[in-house]
Image 1 (cartoon, rainbow, N blue to C red):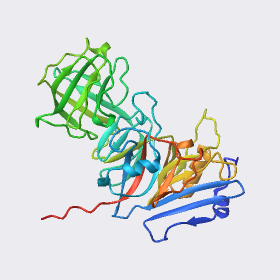
Image 2: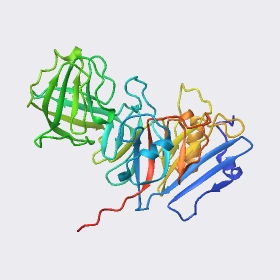
Image 3: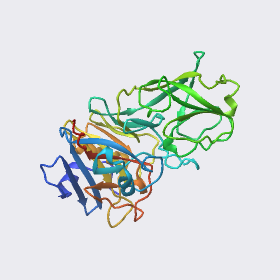
Image 4: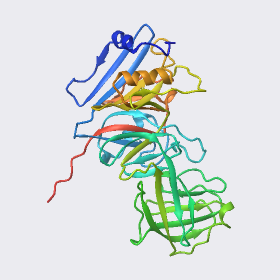
Length: 373
């Protein structure tokens, strides 16, 4: 294992940069190899000034939550997102049996919020096109007709004393038992449900009421599910009743088209962070970070004595700083760590093959806007 105090100037001097793309390309792939440790680090360097590129997240199931390898996620990514050029695996995930592929934290997919934030570090591109990162906290809530309000979660297993909003990204039904479930649609425009965005207050209308659970889901509606323990504390609504949904967060995220969770934060305002109480062992790692001019995707191979040992958080943070990153954030690592670029997987998964993951972060070439007639 290489010591956490390892001098990165020494690393840079001893690690040949095996560039796979032209130096004038807006996206450059490099494999840094240090044979004497050993280490193998895969880096995607993305020019922030390029107008032809955009960032997007992917769902493990294409248009629904699910678990799939990074390569398979890219195969089923909706084409309207753009042509994938490079990607890395994304967030950690929850392991509720009925909801495979539900990310642990916030995900915004093509402008649609598919999971609520849980207080961990998140990476997003703001409405002005600038990369941002911090811990995000949920203030999602339902505003009932009488003026009272209740927090709600999004697309997650419903537990005791909770309200959960389900959308079609979880699959064909809510998979719940009992309670009260309201099928809702947008108001005043009847007959549909628009994808839920960040920092919105949405007025919705109750269409149907069910007490059976496991209510069917379609793209044209959503289900607001009330656990049995709350049914006596929340007013029972009839079809036609109006209520509001608020997707507020701290900090708030107006106009955000993509966001992905992870953590912990590695570099903040040009300084490497420290972590007390953590066991610092080298593992495969994935990170995203940026400087004034570039955004970096980084994957460190690990757990392979003949290829790469991996890095600790401290080592990864120092490496991101050496690239020039002023901000950087860890993503899921271990067997999930994977980097894909220009048509193929570039990293070496620690388990010998790619492990399924819930989502990913990719950079794409923008699709051409339809010609106006």
